[in-house]
Length: 283
Image (cartoon, rainbow, N blue to C red; front, side):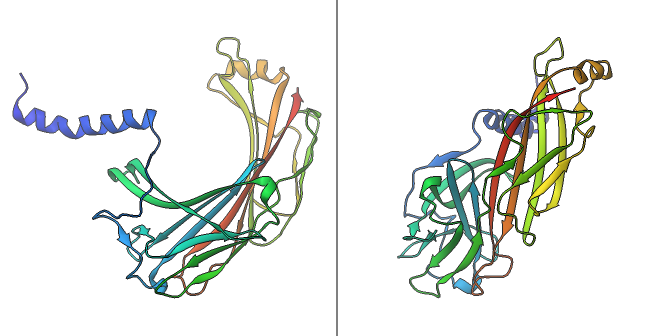
């Protein structure tokens, strides 16, 4: 039989295992939207705009633009917008109001078993983007508005290479080019990856190339011989080098915008675009 002391020691372990099992099946739980607040939520009515952080992220892919905004107080607590306060986005036409989403998160920041976060979100079809200049407006009923939050969304067009182009990993450079370069305020990450057959487990290993913190000058060269094999069995390397694979080249660009001076410092607005193309890679 277990002693009381042993059982007490097992309780934290059991709680952690329960959380990990939950995380394997549920990344987040969206709770029904409501204007009501709980004891743990802060309403914005009594908080001045000068005491609020605004964090806005815009993510564009080939299908849609996803917008997500958080507003927090000086302690980092999420704020519930009520009494006529709202957040909107303008992309060159009429304002679009973001909707509140309360999301439950397991192992929140790895310090809490469970917590709830308040997000303000919108998903806009790509064909409805009138231009790539976005303005986030924080509209207040009883305090100053903060409407001067701007960011330029990077274009998501890949100019080179073309889909299904063929390159040799050992002898060919791959010239990657994208549209709408902007040298300043933009960070570029470029990756190239593809799976290959090991003979025992299909697609168990992959080849990879990565370049981070690139200048957004509109192009980058993947040098011949730079695409590496990632495996845990050195004997497979020669076999993999002889295979033809489908190589996915992905360019991710993050552009930093400017926030309203009424908001607290360290508020931010940023826009990220991800584009990709697949080519054939031969030895």
